Length: 188
Ligand SMILES: Cc1cc2nc3c(=O)[nH]c(=O)nc-3n(C[C@H](O)[C@H](O)[C@H](O)COP(=O)(O)OP(=O)(O)OC[C@H]3O[C@@H](n4cnc5c(N)ncnc54)[C@H](O)[C@@H]3O)c2cc1C
Image 1 (cartoon, rainbow, N blue to C red):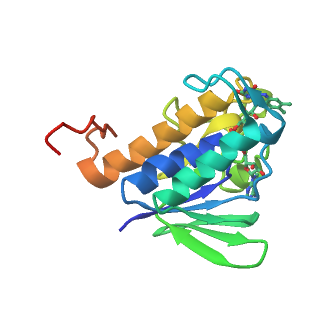
Image 2: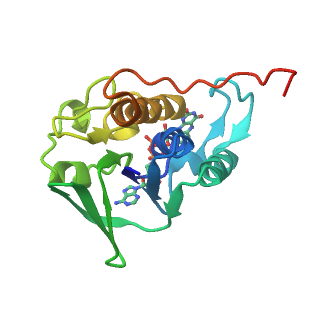
């Protein structure tokens, strides 16, 4: 099974994790639950009339672990690219490897820069609309790439977009993957 590492546990990282874990990609998310979502009172997340950011994070964290994602409560210290993908080292000096890497570190951009990605306007790390970067299998999502559009639903959309590209590569040989579920029929 292919594996993906996600650095950052805000809406961007958790949304990517949801799509990947739900579709059988071995997924590890790093973060210490210190997202600014804990300051937010959400009235503008479509489908959720009203919720604190803290509740949102709790539900999202349960949702991804429910699909089998591994949530590691730590800070990532360094990240490197190698022939097989990416390796991260945590503040406890533990090492993890994965074929794909998604950086979703919010306003912290040092790890993305350490992989050679450049900062542009307002400090944004450059990525395509679908979260791809100039480095193969490396994606950057949410506030890290959009310092001018800091909204939870936009970060979550970016995370989904990066995950769909990974799923397209892994499951459809590059043809577009859609994560669609249907209402169960009455027969079942
Ligand atoms: C006061 C306030 C109110 C807000 N209200 C709203 C609102 O009503 N509606 C709305 O849509 N948005 C609101 N926001 C904005 C919202 O919080 C952001 O849009 C959202 O958090 C961005 O998500 P993200 O995943 O891109 O980044 P973040 O949520 O910033 O997540 C990044 C995560 O990565 C972690 N991280 C960073 N570096 C590392 C590392 N080296 N190793 C491991 N983890 C790392 C961080 O600790 C953090 O948890 C508000 C923000 C604030 C400050």
